[in-house]
Image (cartoon, rainbow, N blue to C red; front, top):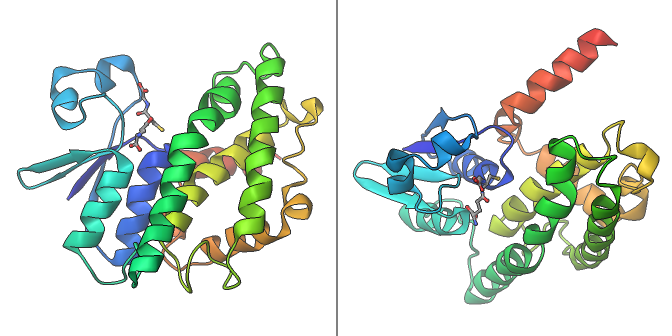
Length: 228
Ligand SMILES: N[C@@H](CCC(=O)N[C@@H](CS)C(=O)NCC(=O)O)C(=O)O
């Protein structure tokens, strides 16, 4: 199976993490996130909205990360990511859909995109607004972490995969040196959201996690470490 993606895409990270957790063999087909690539006729055949991720498995192709997660879980039932009881399945879908329908749509244009695109200072009002929305949601998510430390049930599920791969980019970008003067308080994440911080560490300590860490982020981290 081939995953079409670009490094640092949270939506694509979901698929790679799910494959690792479930032991599904895959190869990554990285592309540069340019309109020429994303909106090319050949890529639109795989992903009609020209977005990553998209997968190819033999003649079968699929886009939309939640659909891909559901497909992978049905195709490879070992280590289920959508629960082991109907109640868990419902709860996991609720968390995934709630996040994608009401939250990630705000996180990206209001918080992540202005920083990635170098508009942290010139677009500070958008960022402050994005941070307020994000903190409001993070408070609810912090209160909603299960007693097990996972989002739903006793083990890692699609809810963890979906939320983690979007929350981690928010923390990464909103704690960049050029953003800190805005006082958005993501550098205080661990104190402000202790349950989410413990959950974050739980995800990071999964043996399958490390290999999925975005290669582009790793390169940038290594360059910074070498320069300091
Ligand atoms: N709902 C889609 C969202 C995918 C998405 O927005 N991907 C971004 C990368 S993180 C993308 O490809 N953006 C390119 C564009 O919008 O042109 C999913 O869950 O797969």
